[in-house]
Amino acid sequence: MRYETKKLFEVLEFHNTIIVGVDFDDTVFPFTDTIYSRTRCNKVVNLLKELKDKITICLYTVADNESLKYKKYIMETLGIKAAYINESPIKLGNGDKPYFNILLDDKAGLNETIEILTEFKNKINEK
Image 1 (cartoon, rainbow, N blue to C red):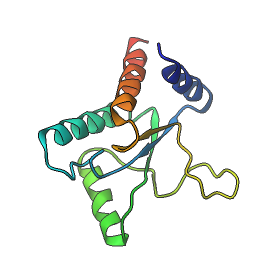
Image 2 (cartoon, helix red, strand yellow):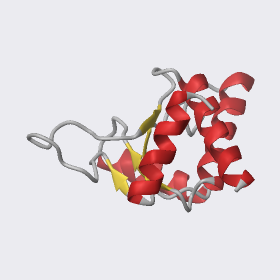
Image 3 (cartoon, helix red, strand yellow):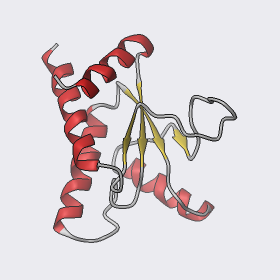
Image 4 (cartoon, rainbow, N blue to C red):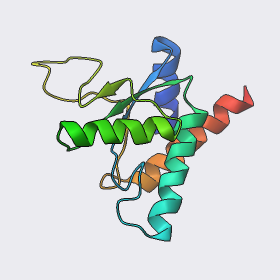
């Protein structure tokens, strides 16, 4: 088991949840309408749905109020609900920095993060 997965289990054991930061465009919803983007977004959505009892979802995205309502609606339609939107459940320091145990973002190593969460999910299912 990789180090990152072990860390997620440590957090889960201590806090009964892991905090997952989630970007919207090209992470949950295919902004660039390609087969690759749609496939990868589907993987993310399926992972979030399968882990819903073990995670706290924090949607972090750039959007005005109307767009945020739309993105929230889309996520709920996909079967994933964000507990927090553009805010962090944990306030550290001055509270400006978002806090996550893992981040799903198309511009931040999304494929590797999918692999880590898939391993995490598979290990949970083995128990």
